[in-house]
Length: 119
Image (cartoon, rainbow, N blue to C red; front, side):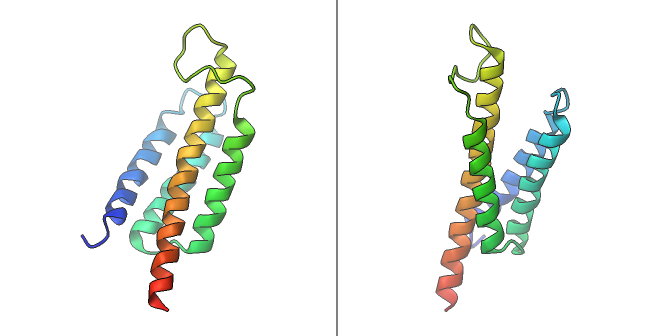
């Protein structure tokens, strides 16, 4: 395959579908189905060559902003232990959004570089 990022985007499509699936017992599962579903769809569109730069930048920005907003007041890690479960859950959710944001921004960077090389 000429572009290994395309293969990686297929892997992220599956990972984001899995991330949505494991939200089934979350109180706000529908919200997270949508969040990870959009990420999976964007990854599949990137794989198919249908995602555009503007869409990837907008999604990356939205996911990054969501990560920033959800960041807990006191980060206590991601494993359940002696910390406050609300802080731990918010930390997990925030880091999940940050991962998606980084992936979307990598797609955008790749799309930008490809578009510049065509000019």
